[in-house]
Amino acid sequence: MGEEHMVQIQVPRVKLGNQGLEVSKLGFGCAGLFGVYDISVSEELAVSIIKYAFSKGITFLDTSDFYGPNAELLVGKVLKELPREKIQLATKFGLVRAEPTHMVVNGTPEYVRSCCEATLKHLDVGYIDLYYQHRIDTSIPIEETMGELKKLVEEGKIKYIGLCEASSDTIRRAHAVHPITAIEMEWSLWTREIEEEILPLCRELGIGIVPYSPLGRGFFGGKAAGENLPANSFLRSNPRFQGENFEKNKLLYAKIEMLAEKHRCTPAQLALAWLFHQGDYVVPIPGTTKIKNIDNNIGSLRLKFTQEELEEISAAVTPEEVAGARVADNLIRCSWRFANTPARETKSSNLFTTGKLNGSSFGVFSQNPVTETYRKLAVVGGRGKFRMARGFAKLKTCDLNFTTECSFIEYKVTVFHY
Image 1 (spheres, rainbow, N blue to C red):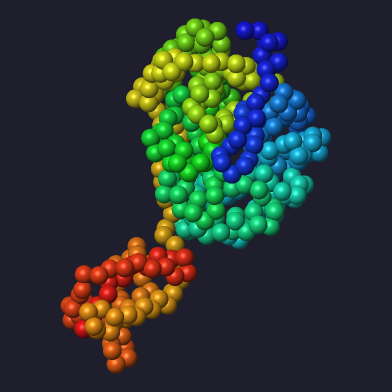
Image 2: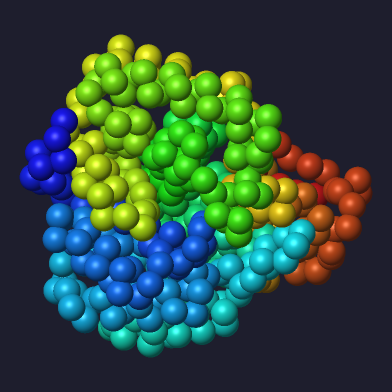
């Protein structure tokens, strides 16, 4: 299919999640422009690439404060030359720095606010459309991070909230504080782990999926075909691009290449189109440093697969055949499988219930939420005497349980009478 035909394709508008955010069906990831994977490009070229993407209908731009000191400044410069109201801008906070053995992550309320304020200043905008936590801070309850993000929404500084590399438990707990609009996760033909657990949860909650590295960190876009990696490329530390693993993975690329020929498209187009067919609320964000690749990516929107063809493509790259972990060891600990956070400590809340049971007066006082064992129950007798029950052996237990609510915390207590 000729390039001239591809660039004439209209990029559709779609809903990302069910909270009201509408974006272009194909987004643009800015990380590669700033040297996250390879060598960064010149400011002039970066500006021209983003503007070209917008001219072709790609209005969903994804960046981060972690992509270097000039990343958000440059995106802000581009926004001055484009109609702000037609851009859906996503950016991120939370990654502080990379250490040799791990990533330093911060999700404290103070850090959330300071990052947001700095980003608004760097971009020189009044609001952020979609604000992600770049990685989950597992040292604090997710409710603390989300509480501050919710305040930023109420203040009009951000419109929608997203999470990156979050576990299912963290997603559900975060969503209970404030609706999550999108989850950004690595998802591609050769990285499919989220399909078992994360994807069904997002479907249940109406959360959009933004696949990053939808071309397998460039593997399906040419890097598997012998495209040389620069000496300082981030991908040189990726197990799938190393030695024997890389040679094995090239065999998978060959199968995708054959299927691409069958569908009269490029391997990259096949890989993107496969994602487009994974249901609603899926918006991949491939990045590139070459304008021709933008046209190629847009061309993937013309492809239509039957269910049988989708299954054939999926079967061409099975998880068992992929050689090597998706990220290096120093990154795996901040991935979604390790992104549970501590339980939030509940504040004391005086819950006191009185009544009659079998003719006896009874009362129950509890400060223990349902998730805790009944460690303490204060029982008030008919004469008003107060006793703290540290063990239930001395009290006669009836078989009546009841549930009530206080300060939005559910309590379940056992009623005793005497």
